[in-house]
Image 1 (cartoon, each protein chain N blue to C red):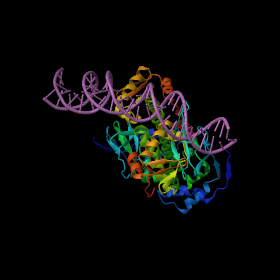
Image 2: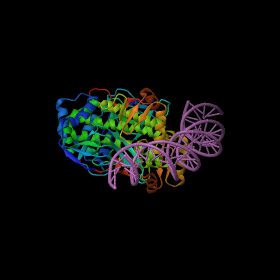
Image 3: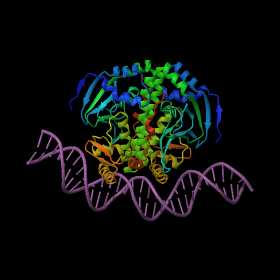
Image 4: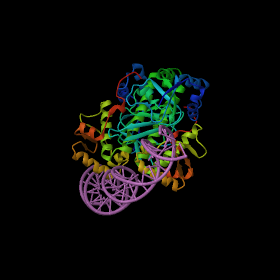
Length: 250
Length: 250
DNA sequence: CGCCCTGTTGAACGCTGTCAAAGTCTGTGG
DNA sequence: CCACAGACTTTGACAGCGTTCAACAGGGCG
């Protein structure tokens, strides 16, 4: 897939600002600093590798639009996805301090990435402590999501795992204002969904049929339609506390 | 179990300093700031709850000695542990910005905790940017460990999971200088180990027998003896890159 | 001495994986 | 407009890893 480079615009940080504002107020100075931290915009297509495992990193990438995933590959070729990222997520802010990631970040759809040089992030840590804490917070929410995925993989049944993931994504899309009334974007194959849940594509297929049969959710080519949110939450045992949706001083 | 309160000493931050120094140099000013951030020391016993899910937090706790765990409880009473913490780990530094944790932190052994008021952490973020980044880094390593556990729970067999956990703990204990030549402390029941791996205690028991039978590792009441580290690593597919053991400017 | 927690063992069950094949959709090019 | 290729989805039969259930053993501690 070809890659295009563009000039950044104010709209590019909108989803990130929404995401952070849901957890604490941001000042104008802070939102401006985020906007100015963006060096350029690049676009990629499905399957493109945005960050390769082990590479030394100099930029962090903010997902402006589209869907991407953190994917860990095993020696035998099997894969496990450890997080899905939607607009407003800094897909490799972890790389700002880790310097190398131990996994790939790959695009699941056409994506627009805002490139932020680590040097500018460093300046933020030296001049804007509250904004620094908010960026730190965003990585802590990533960690909380990781923990919930550990519970899913370790203790939930296949149908609960898929249900839980759907609840999580609907909630996160709502935070940035990108969910429909009862649906959210999901441009993902069943094989990729299987890699999220640690299942096989065959079994994911059966689970999706069961979810449809129970009237809970329907899997489409590009999105998921939630037919019965309460039922889905109950099926999943979903509680949104781990997403830290309270606005409070941080 | 009774709780005792004591005055902090320099030695209380030693393991943390070692852990951070393994990733980047710390200045004297920074190590002093860490030492002065400690308000008091408290001790707890096995089974004690150090942090309860949902509580509003005002301090973060640095584990000085002993072993503790992040534990998520499900409605049906089953549990999943999402991380084990050893000396030098800030068990709820995440709580500094999340303000509430979505899981419990429990002691697995007698533990010594250094209590650090959030107010003092906030001052660090406002005056010591590099130390702030190092503390942030420590939470990013937690997240990397979480991701590895997702892979374990999602894609590794039971014996690989247990082997991988042993490799991880031996490596982390070595960083803070608390591992023996071929062994590390593990004051944990098989049921608790099962909660780490998303398995049943019965199956964990069989896996431990298999590891012993293959001459890879032996499970003791208070520690694990690694008989064949290379073999264990191969069995687990263990790579230590996710622990960010390179010292470099951050 | 006796309780309770922890560890151990065996047998049967079942969720999910594996394997194989057929069906469907979509974009492409003739 | 149709034929075709390739990726994705769907289905069925069967196997296996890990669970469940039950019973028993061992050991620390009151």
